[in-house]
Image 1 (cartoon, rainbow, N blue to C red):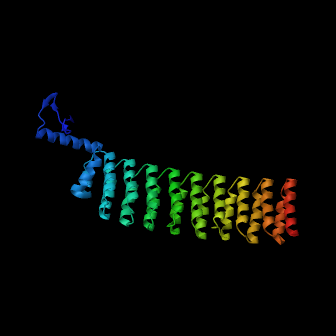
Image 2 (image 1 turned 90 degrees about the horizontal axis):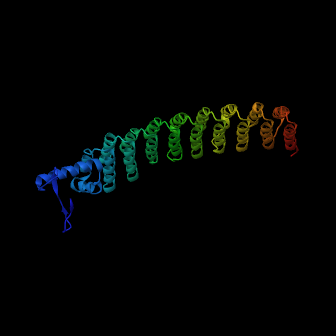
Image 3 (image 1 turned 135 degrees about the vertical axis):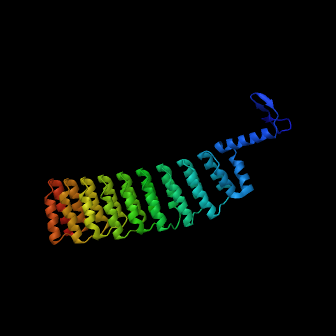
Length: 361
């Protein structure tokens, strides 16, 4: 095949090296050869898909996709279809089902699903179910997560779809990708607290302390939670092993203004599980800085200082308590007893001086 003088293609047809006439039979063979080549390579998809659409509409393209021989080519045809036509809802669902059934490569299937997410609102429940069904077929954590995230970005997700999406995310083994899904969900205005148990169930399945804590922190940063929900967050945080990450979560509880003083026992039990004096003291200080606590709660914080071994950190908590709260009666007695337990003279004296200064104000 080469250009002729008139600008048209000139065909030279040979069989076993001998030139033959390029007759109707030869043309039929060459046509079938090009079709077979196209179905494994997709080299002419840019012109062929529009031609199929013009001839038989989207259904003609879907039918041809069923004849293709490679996932990459199927991906190209699906994407060209969505670029050149807007499918009605029933046909879009059919395309989603076909992509799920006929594409086995994660990357190619994910590309098709992401293209659909970019071009369609998916505001119909049946479309969302079909989209999620396609996502469930993905085995690669990265592809699975980014497709689920696209679904989560849809407005007004039904509780059933939201729950099913989080259930789908449980099959993801990479902690980072699980965390990415949860932090995306936490930032959505459509998040419903009724799904908190499912959210925390997935968060608790994260083994990396950093990803676990950031998923909990994201929830508190973006959502106003009920006391019961915060209790569930604190319970989830109890499975975090790293002192810093556990402490970071407790700080976030305070800063998000989701903390209710009725939860102080749960909060302090988490503080007890922290082995590092610095992290323990900063969590107690944060509690006093962010909230106006009742005397009983202040007394419990003072009592907690018994478990702090470092004189400096113990003094830091006690002086903060003296600065913010009036020490009288049994509370004053508990404070002085805690101060007297400090071995370093400098830290003991400054702790006692703090209560004296408060009383002179």
